[in-house]
Length: 425
Image 1 (cartoon, one colour):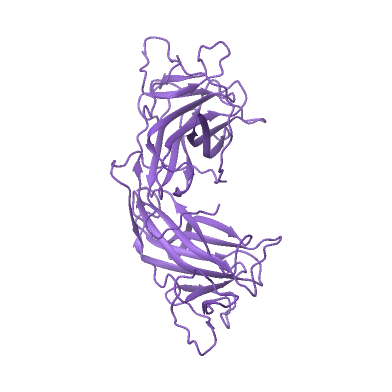
Image 2 (cartoon, one colour):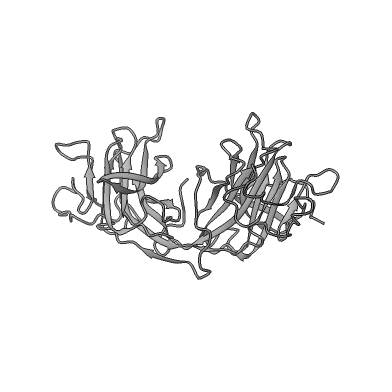
């Protein structure tokens, strides 16, 4: 019999706000240790041009970077400056080297660099920049708050095309201590327009005029993710007899949390994909069977994996999601929702680390969509470090509908040496 438990949870210690996006990630990787490598960036710590210590302590140029400066006459919005001596009130205590870059806070000012490296199929990328604010003219931390963007791009007919962006705001920024902020690009696919194209890095102001950002130590790490085994990931067991009832209310390898009041576990189970000529055949199912999960909050599938959360590694959970052709979750208010989560156990209590909510709008009953949840790099002092990885798929809506699930994947990446282990979201 399936395990029955009340659906009362202490919701996560840490909940990142992550924009929901459809991601077609690679279905498998070789089960070898995660590998990573630093990608060279010219003048990554802005040590050139070298500033004469006996002259003006800043110059309006940045070697090896393309300066995009709204001040076309004097280029006063971009350049490099020398860190002040140790003991000065405005000395930046964790600068990398003796110089940093400055960037005017008005939208339109930017630094860009086209790298020699290319986006490799099967790899993902972490861009990290150390960011601070000017002690004399900081970007606004009051409404409207000034913002700054990290960007990875490629060029199409010589025009930069952004792939991913991460916005950082000026609140909680220091003028004497830089903060690492990071951007993540999921695994590059062979069909992506940027596959095998030159990598582009951009640092862009996106706020109002009047302030200056301090920038330093730009790093880009390329990682080859590896897949973490998940038992019965495509719900092929137990095998349903095609000549019998076309569903089975049990799922091997998963803990089923089912709010069926009669205790018959009718809200969770597996079913075979209908024949290809059927109106409800799912065209991109992985294997012959899928799972069903009724839409009422309290129904869920959970699995404690054999793997653990490793320090320095980050994790991406991906699930192929669809809806029943006969009983879809509600697309009207209250909209039916589904939740993906990564958790660990604290004693006997299950603790969410990150979770992601999916709404029932824009679904097809015949084609699944991949949805992903991202857990940034695990810190050695995180309470979940070295704890068993837990995966959960939970209905969080109202009764009456049915979610369809398939092809659950978990990828582990090692960001590599020198990459910040904190991600500002």
